[in-house]
Amino acid sequence: KALSQVLFLTPHLPAFFLRRRLRSHVLEIRHLDRAMLRLGLGQLSEEELKAACYLRGLNPTRLGMSECRAWLEQWLGLSCKLQASEASLLANSMVLLSLNYVEAKE
Image (cartoon, rainbow, N blue to C red; front, side):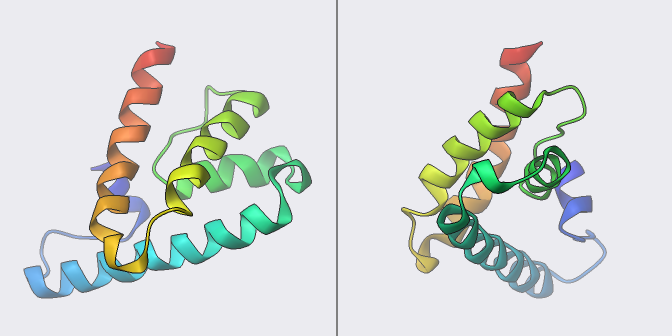
């Protein structure tokens, strides 16, 4: 539900539009991930790290900078290995990695 809000997905749209919008958002995140990998996570401020986590489905409000960086490193490791044709796997990974990380910390 939270991820739907981040990606501006509303269940009131037809399934065709939802799939297309989700794929577009996931591919955009994939491009951002590749750019972030080239830049390096060490170059990002705490605010930028938290914004990056939030955009990828993780609620960073109770996480420190090192935890956000560790999660993003995991995420980038997965995201940058996947092909554009594997966008659905990346979308599902957003949910799985976010939920499992938060549960492990509580």
